[in-house]
Length: 279
Ligand code: SAM
Image 1 (cartoon, helix red, strand yellow):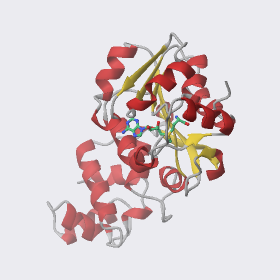
Image 2 (cartoon, helix red, strand yellow):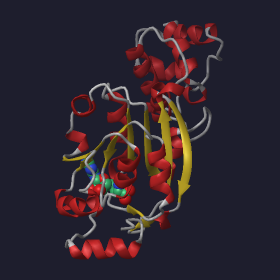
Image 3 (cartoon, rainbow, N blue to C red):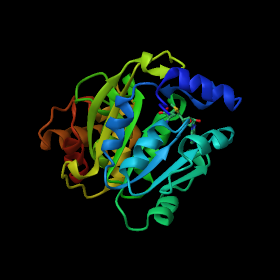
């Protein structure tokens, strides 16, 4: 069965009385290259998939990975998934909301000490919270490869000084090295969504090696800088962190080699770490 074929998808939906649900961001992939590109990142390892849907990416993962665990919120897909991917003995489908799942506990239980990658065509309505949850959960994923709205992909891979650069870019860089693998036009989905997409892989081994003496403070400093993007970093730190006077912050920035009126959006992750190390 070719699950990327629109006629097959429609026939399956008819057979199982399944209607796609906008509230769960159900736009199924119809370009057969995309599941291949995403699943290649997990080849020979284990995969945690979020949102198997009809099982299109799941099937590609099951063929290439030792074990696959797919977390799906929509229980009405159970029978359909039984038909499309039920024959894979290395697959476990867990019906649960990924936002309420203890991801680290699930991965430890299912994969023990094996290497695990995250692979997903994420539902648009919950992309950033899911990504943040994956990066924050404490489980050491080899990589997190996700199809997201193109604008989100641009934010994840942005360079300092661009309008797309923000707190999520830096969160991503603290986790690994974000790389855009491919653009995916809206016409590659059924039903066709109102936005284009792209696949981004965040590779943990590619992470820039930076030293920061206080990771918690780094999180707060980054948050303060981008909460008030238009403010200079001195003003953002003064109102968001406190601890020092504006004059002291200005001196600190100059001592770190930046101008006193620099904005956070111009600084790289290692620049932020340098500031925190001197606070
Ligand atoms: N992987 C399939 C594909 O590529 O065609 C489906 C991708 S579709 C964009 C998103 C999938 O995530 C849907 O199956 C949807 O039901 C599921 N989903 C939505 N919200 C979820 C959540 N909070 N937890 C787990 N799965 C979710």
